[in-house]
Length: 254
Image (cartoon, rainbow, N blue to C red):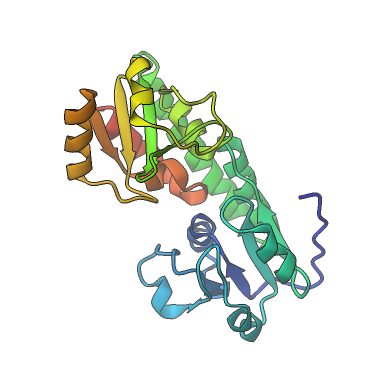
């Protein structure tokens, strides 16, 4: 965003407004410093019972945040609005991430290591993620490159396009996203799929909670194989990547 964030004191009171980042902070040993989170910060399970929930990622309670007296607030360019960032940075240092690919996720972890004085833990986490990625790539290096469409919403039907972290993760899985020529999260018609020679449709568990009934309905309607996938492993960056590649191995039947 072209901003300079000035840090003038140790950061011992953190408000995190993004679930991926909240999980990463906990895995870096910073749970005690977390004072505020969103209602979507569901990992680890107990967190919403022990921390102050300040709203969602799109709507936050500024009064609750003020009472927490944060030293820093962590946002994300995609998940949180520019209005939220602009309002909060009038009173607090606000760090905004923009994670569109694997390297960007590692960069975020390293930045948190610097910000919160845990560079050794951050470096170790990055090393473990890179090792998992390397093993996964060796496993699927000879696999076919399937053509897929990745659905995130119904009514209207929305898929993943380019310039997204999900599209990047599809590529790491050896999938060819048939909608990579469209920007971000386009709305499509199901008839658009008939000319795409798809190998699979992937239905994500989030943000729309696709279920077995949706899978069967689309298979019957389109005659294309459909897989239900755990969207957290495709869209959550940060420390979630350490377990993502084990999930991807199973998804590929390995």
